[in-house]
Length: 163
Image (cartoon, rainbow, N blue to C red):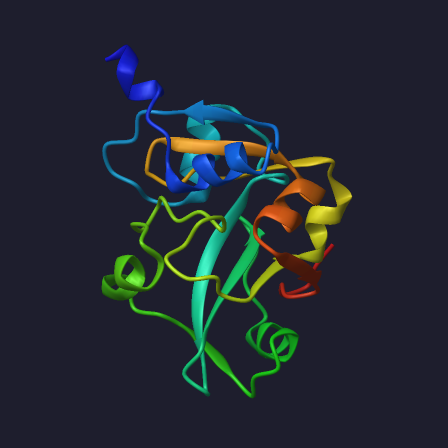
């Protein structure tokens, strides 16, 4: 099973190509529930653990939003951050088709297409944060500025009552 840890995801291959340092944390998670469960399994702080959400705008375009695992997206703020009148979560069955990743293993880096990506401004409170590594059982610890560059993202206030 040692080979399992050496499996690179698309996100990791992109980071390697860009020469961006990162650390991989692995966990055993037979039944994915949510990011809080993952953070607890890995023993990492909830505050610096972020989830990746894919939404579709009224125009039909797809957008990626990265926010703290315990936060809720402010849908109006998220829509405004990408120039849409409104956005809504895509259906779970469409996650793989749109992103190339599965629910629970959706990284903001290396999706099928380069969608506009917005990271919650709370990320700027940290030097490094944790995001999905691109498959269930894998998390990446990465510098915030490196993540912004790798995901070609920007930050905005997109959560309900950000702290």
